[in-house]
Length: 160
Image 1 (cartoon, one colour):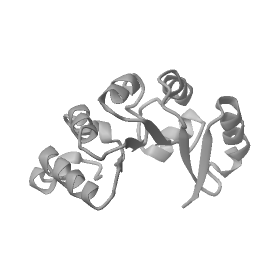
Image 2 (image 1 turned 45 degrees about the vertical axis):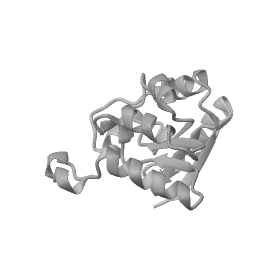
Image 3 (image 1 turned 30 degrees about the horizontal axis):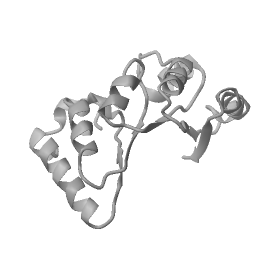
């Protein structure tokens, strides 16, 4: 996604109807799991309605969401109600200042609050993706492992 989302021409985006049509066609060849993804799919207008429509497509057994997580806190219950079964999110550092640098964002992200919300809504298993960057966050591996132990979740280390 470009830094300035407005640069994306709306005619280049799939409409909700087109996405649902693709899902319907996919079920015809045996696909029964859908992953909604993108930097943060929650920026899409009408995302909850789209997820609900996908969940009603005959043959769809599971919808998951992959996200950078920044907009997820406080929205987990609504996502579950729309039809999302579980969430994977990216977390490249446990340090709040490094988070701002890596994500080029001024947003705060409380991963503990998010994990607890996911657990409360029984959106399990929780999987976290962490991209290891030499000299930036690779020294945090022990902290990530401790986080995985604390919540009994999966951390997947991805090499850049």
